[in-house]
Length: 179
Image (cartoon, rainbow, N blue to C red; front, side, top):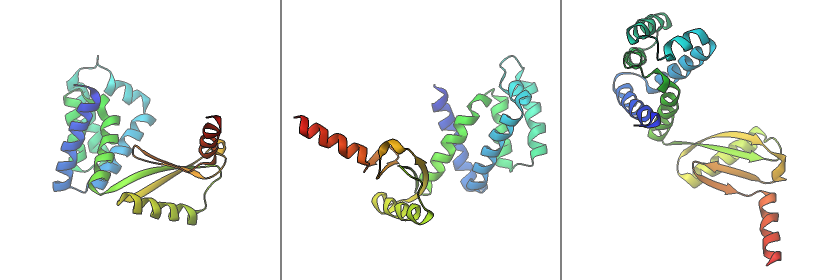
């Protein structure tokens, strides 16, 4: 089983438990904060991720960290379980998959919009509404600036790309004229 598959299984199970026993969005925040915390504490990260460190030590260390962090019981149990099973290296993928599954359950999709110049907040909200109409879901947008597209925009929603860039239009015209 690949680590991505294992992370997905843990994320699904966590979402099911969090939906029944806790606030799923709070669990998402706690996972993200814990991953960020580990990145800020490289010594702790090395100990917890090192396969040479005995599992009981990892579990004890994680239990101490969880009690100090005052995490929700669901998140705390998950982190201790991952330490017990020596699956802590899955944590980053697990947090990512959990966020994706939670967004899917809430009927939210993320979109990346690339433009040649920065978008105003009004324009961003108008694009968000248009994409929501197209997808039938709530949309959260991240914007990116890339002056190589010359103008227009490129929107990526999941695996679908809506390309209305001038660069692409010019390329299509060149191809038509060349034939």
